[in-house]
Structure formats: C-alpha cells, structure tokens
Length: 233
Ligand SMILES: C[S@@+](CC[C@H](N)C(=O)[O-])C[C@H]1O[C@@H](n2cnc3c(N)ncnc32)[C@H](O)[C@@H]1O
Image 1 (cartoon, rainbow, N blue to C red):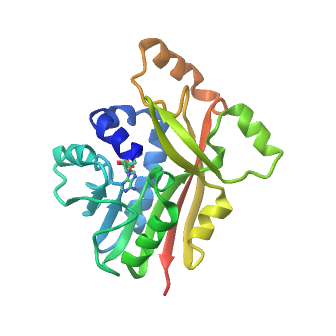
Image 2 (image 1 turned 90 degrees about the vertical axis):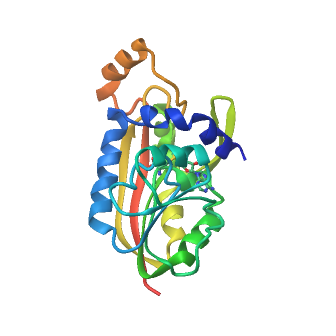
C-alpha cells in the first residue's frame, strides 16, 4: 500500500511541509469548524501528526505508525494504528468524527464512509474535508469552467510513490452522506503554488517565487470542500 509507505517515509517532514501561509487559511477554517461543532467522544480518522488532536480531546487513528509517533511527540496519548476502511471500534461508539485534509481522497471511499457511519452514534456529527476536482492549475480550471466536471480517479505521483487519489465533485461528495443532514458546507480555494502535492522542501528561490505568486491565486489553486454532516437515524 503505497499511501502508507509514503507517509511512513515522510512523517518527520510532514509538519514543516504543511505549515505555510498557503495552507493557513484552510487550517483556520478547519479549526473554527471543529471548535463550533465537535461534541462528546471524538475520533480523528487519519489524524496524521495530530494537528487537530490537541484542539479537542480526540482519539487519533492513522494507518502510519511514524505519523502517530510524531503525534506522540506532541503529547497526544490516545492513538491507535488502524485503517479507515476497517475501524477497530464497536458500532455507535462516537459522537463526533473528524476526517480532515485528503484522508478520504486516499481511502477506499465506500468502505471508509460505511465504517464512519457504523461507529457514529445517532445524532453524531462528521466533520470532513476533501480535495475537489478543481484542484488542478489554471489551464485545467479554465477547461472545467466550460465543461461539467467529473469525479477524477488518478495516480498522484509524489517522491517516487504513486498514490491512488480520488478527487470529488460537489454532488458526489454530498451524495456520500445523503442519508445525513447537511449542517455546513463550504468550498474553499487554497493556493498551492508552485507544485501542489510534490511535498518537498522549498529552496530559497522557490520561497521567493511563492511570495511573488501570493496574489495570482488562480495559477495553481485547489478547491477543498469542508462540511459537517449529522446522522439523523
Ligand atoms: C494529508 S494527511 C492528513 C493528516 C491530518 N488529518 C491533517 O489534517 O494534517 C493524510 C493522513 O491520512 C492517513 N491515511 C491515509 N490512508 C489511510 C487509511 N486508509 N486509514 C487511515 N489513515 C490513512 C495518512 O497516513 C496520513 O497521516
């Protein structure tokens, strides 16, 4: 499973790669939502290095042990290694589930969503974000503006790893939770210059370029869907 291998190998660098002004808007939006909607016993699926675990008193689950070790270094204690597609918890055991920042894009979607629904209590909430089909650069965006965008399955090539990646249309994402009540939905653009997903350290020159590109946000923008769904039955 190349996704796990990728995160195993790059866990130490994850935080430095994902702490930048390009992502700070998305992080702020996630945090506001978490503060407003989280209640009760909470599970963070694909918790990674524990970015959200210290905001709420959640159990963190991730497929990658090195990612969980990074979370441990931040004093997160309730950590479980496991897969989103086969959650090691009984039915209806959580009030809130977090699944943030591409976790669902990388999973076997139907299995993962069924598992989330299984372990969530009635009236519980799922706070979730996914990357949408709009995540490509300017040319692709222009093309899509004149066509009906379709869900996109692709191989995302990162540092020699080929990760299965599924980019969502809005309709497809919402329909995954059609039996839930939609409490919040927002599409946010984040700037991902120069190469979204290449996950490498930026050189000095690239950092300068990043700053210069700050305002040309359509150069390489991504749309992230951020949503809250409530289980009503
Ligand atoms: C982009 S990171 C997001 C981490 C964290 N949620 C955040 O917002 O920083 C994706 C995480 O999903 C985890 N992951 C990928 N596939 C998974 C699966 N099938 N089950 C559990 N975790 C998975 C990876 O190990 C990685 O830590």
